[in-house]
Length: 290
Image 1: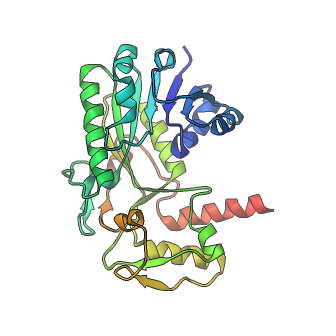
Image 2: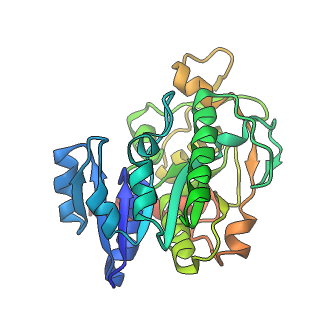
């Protein structure tokens, strides 16, 4: 039987996973709301499915593996709101993945957290994620979903890094004393998801981040130095003009541990810190420009 992944909300991280699975003979069905995005997925070897948020019984019945990357909102998880009964009818799956966020931990004033840290989000987005995780776990309790929850740190990778803003002069080095973020290269997300699929077994919760939590201004400084461009001046967080969304990211500070993906899944990060990740991105970007 062909391994078939139904990827609901087939976005940046899921597309990176597809690039690993397709050469192994997988069938990937990726949902999108955009006809333009659907054409892009065809070019990548993915079967696109325009999904307006309603029933999806046939693709679920064909799937051996299920991945949801859809963000929840005040009304809950859109996938579960629309498809809970159909997911239960189609189960069991060999593997079910849900992409969450390290925002579920809340603010720890720069201290370390791991998967056993109590969840105490301070933002609405984090609170929605906690509720969505609980809803997926409740659904898994009704049927054998083999649920794996992945709490992702800040994602960067091709076309999603600091270089463009440094080049065009819009990068900002906003400093809030004691502020640290964890981050993860999209290729390491994909490799961890693939390792989880290969391992299967009992579902678990995993933090996806690199080994080096760091202040955001340090990342911008390093990117500028790699480009040989002036380092943007620092701005005090209290005085900086930011959108409410941007400011909310500074409301929480923590360092996230990733020991479990190494000990349980055998993951060895390609990019264990932002310096190696940015170097690889710049090299790839330079190759594309040649």
